[in-house]
Structure formats: structure tokens, C-alpha cells
Amino acid sequence: MQSNFEDYLRAAEDHYLQTPEMNGFKQQVDALQDRLALYETLRDQELIIFQAIADQLNNETFSNSQSDQEKVFTHWMSLLRYSAMAMLTDQPQTLTIQLSWLKDVVGGSEFTPLHQKMSELLHLSLDAVLSQDQLALLEPFLQEANNTLVGQSSPELAMLS
Image 1 (cartoon, rainbow, N blue to C red):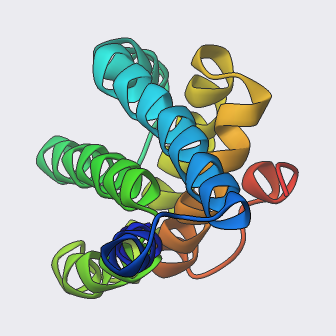
Image 2 (image 1 turned 180 degrees about the horizontal axis):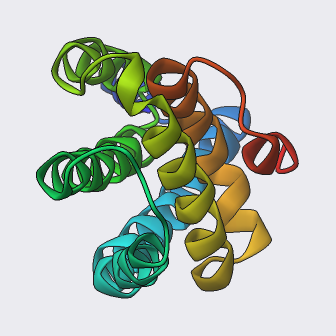
């Protein structure tokens, strides 16, 4: 996103943007508006999204301690926020960097079942809150996060592609 806007701004330093450039700029602005609306929805609905997940997790039994479950839950909250910001700025490399250090923090393979369940529940919760177009905008970022933390593609997320 940033580089596309910068390209248009640099071009505008030399000349008024021509029709094709203006059309490209308008497309960038429209796409940004869609991403911003999604970001605001995620921000405003975060409590609802994660309360649904917490309610479901309470019905599940994991070998992990309550403290470990809370940490994983918190990591997935951060993960959604990181994904939302990367989606908003249209800079997937930002998410890649954040995931690289988060992967070191989240724990080993003993957490995989918990991460898989969190991934599944997050998708279900997002599906209840977001439109299909919004899910499509966010899906590539969630898929990358899922691949990093769970190490495989989630069938629920794969259905979005």
C-alpha cells in the first residue's frame, strides 16, 4: 500500500496525475477504505469475537494448564491484531516479521492441539461477525499465521480461498 501511494505522490511532483494514474490512485483509496472498515470492525468487535472463543474453550479439555491456555488465547488475540494491521497496510512482510518472533514465544508441539482449536474457533467467530468480502481480505493473513503456529493449513481457512 505505502509504496503504491508513494509512487503516485512522486509522479504528482512532476506532473498532474493523468487519467490512468488517477484511476489507479482511486482504486488504491477504495481498497484502503475497505481495509479500514474491516480493521474498525475487528477493533470494535474484538470482545465479541474472543468471548465466543473463550466460551467454547471452556467446554473443551486440553492437557495444557489453565495458565498455558490463557497464554495461547492471548497470543491469538495478538495474532489477529497483527493480521489486521498487516491487512490494513497491505504489507504482509510486517506480519511475517511479527510471526517469526511470536513463533519462538508460543511454545512447542505440546501446544499444537490448542493452537489448532484456537484457529478453528477464531474462524467460526470471525465468520459470524464479518462478511464474506471482509473474510476474503483477512484470510491470507490468517492463513499465514495459521501455517506458522499450527504448521499446516486449516480446512476452515482453506475454504475461504
